[in-house]
Image 1 (cartoon, one colour):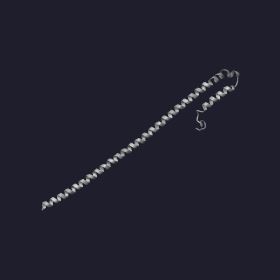
Image 2 (cartoon, one colour):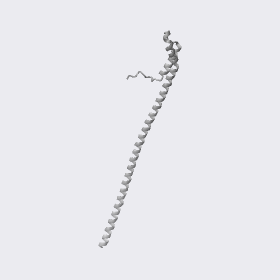
Image 3 (tube, helix red, strand yellow):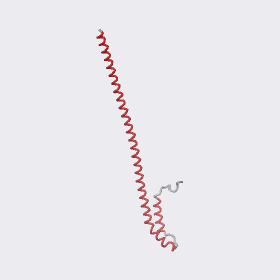
Length: 135
């Protein structure tokens, strides 16, 4: 009878230990799953941060590139306008240099009209508020 009682106690204890082992293993799997999920979320957040930073860098580089392109276009426009001014006005200036002091004469109407037109063309390159800003 002691053997039967020992066998029953041993069976009950084995069953209880097996059940506790099963519960503990299930909890360990849940903890492991939660840990993996947390690590995956953390990795996703880091990727999002990198993506945001990359987007900022791309936007900044685009701004720099656009600014550079605008500056080159502006420089080309200024150089073309200056070249046009020189080409249009140089004969008038040379004539004045050679004959202006001799005759002490004022520039004629045609010359002044040409100079004024070229001057106005150059003024278009300056911003509207140029010279009005206090520095």
